[in-house]
Length: 233
Image 1: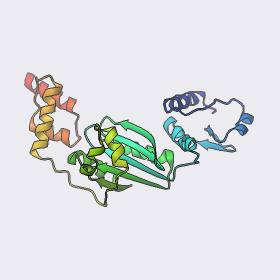
Image 2: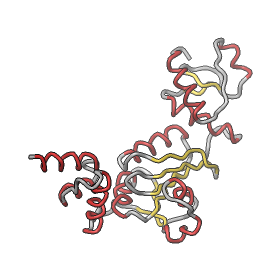
Image 3: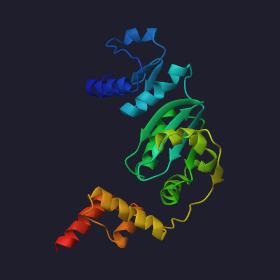
Image 4: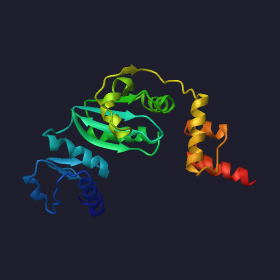
């Protein structure tokens, strides 16, 4: 790397993913390696532009492949979606995202980093509102399947990432168009209940604020803060 600070950031990302590496200072040394990450062209060089992309570009080499042909992204929907990435049948990543809005960006990075021949997204049908929001952010760009979680429940020991693993290996029905996001009264009441828990029983947000949370316009914390300000006024 010409940019040593960039090289350091890549090294940290490789360490986090348990990918073995060596830092080379002389271009002549690269002849002894199967793949070399670089920010400039060269023989057997892999060009990359951000640490996560660099790590994904070489991850397939750990499995004896120059790149994965098929990537499956399994998603357990919810306010904080659990996500796993499967490369040619191998679990290569698992993460719990902070909110639904992060899913599209994460999938885009996965696609750019691994550059597979095909990418399939499988999402559980459990949380209808968040499921449909996730589907709508992806369906125009990727193959999306909705998986019946009732058929996988016996294999799930806990939620989020673990259920996303089961979802990834379960075929679902293909979604071709965006879905309606219908927020039922019970869902709003559940968000209001969570606001009471989050505020130690001091705040119950209004139905209107609960709806904004359900649609992803504001976070639950923001809704609690707004309700607190209203009560103080």
